[in-house]
Image (cartoon, rainbow, N blue to C red; front, side, top):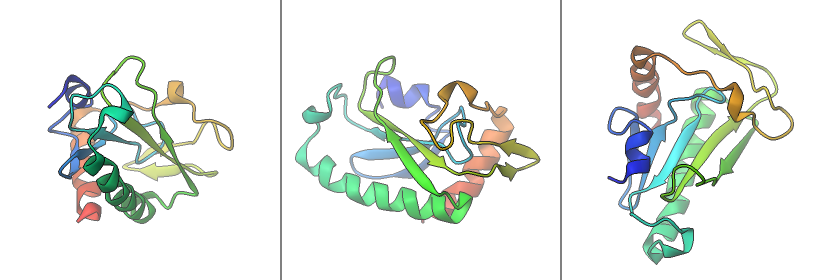
Length: 142
């Protein structure tokens, strides 16, 4: 796996694996259910991905949105392709909502609603909480 995937906690944060993509729990939760959709390729440019990855991305996005709808009942989903620090192809997937969500006694507000997501307001769950979130979310991808 590439360095970007490893930075986002793989394999501990893995929710679903596709041929060309991984869906990972984002260790810093901008909103509850924040994910990373990461290309398994070593490509650092979106256009460098193989054609098959683009076709499969539709399946990954559909799975993400079904799972997040079930888990967090989002109102919108933002896909951010930033790639400034972590250079391999990946998207930050941020479920958006107007009212805070609570999970395991932690309140997750959407600090940027209705504007752009506030990445600087992310909650960083402890490793055991990340495991619990993965355990809760992973079955929604089956």
